[in-house]
Image (cartoon, rainbow, N blue to C red; front, side, top):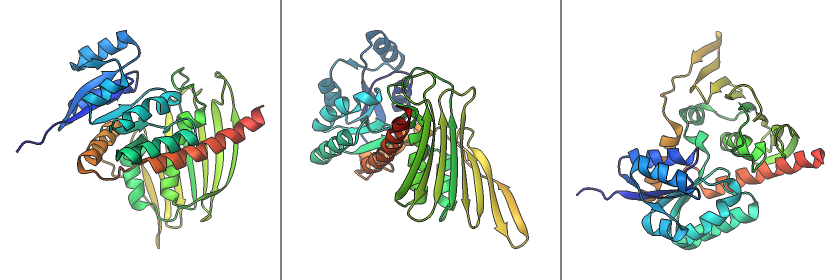
Length: 309
């Protein structure tokens, strides 16, 4: 018997949302059932491109779909997600889960009440680089991450910590597996009203230290991480899905290129979300992890802004 197609939708089909729509349209076992977009011209463009229905309300989107990607600006995540959850929709909410811990708590409560799944779009967790890190990282002692991007107005409804650093916060929390006990941060506003460059030094209860650098006013794109542990160190590039692993051996240091099977992280992320919905299993990046990453990101942001005032 042929498996019924999972009806998927997208709320917000801007720069990133269009790719959610594209992938739902391509994935085996899914059907792009509806899109919701506040800009009617953009809605028609994407609807025509993928031959999918356009709806005008959240109720209509919920009626049409089993699973929905919420890809609206961060400050609208809560407003869009709650009605969809109350209608029983399973959600993939782009990172960060929302703009405040209170909003995150309400989203998780609504999901629990409706018995609906919430996955948070921490895309690097589905990058093949992260899969390799999860296999080989064991008791890291020191982690450095650098994430740089040219300036664009999209995403500036929040500062660079919630815009970019939160990716690395999520990665580090997953790899370290320990509670942060000390955070020291600094940031600078350059082109927006909030911080555009930031650094955070995070010390964990198990002794690991992470140093995170981000900028959204860079002349180049960089997404790199280095992990140091007693057995050696890793230097990996999330963007190019490449890097090397240096192991300590009796003969000295042994440097090997990392054998990463490349893939499109967003497609891997949405495929994982679809499988979670189908099999009613906890998503790899659930709402609690998204909330924990948000909590640390807000702590860093508050610390930065206390010195900027």
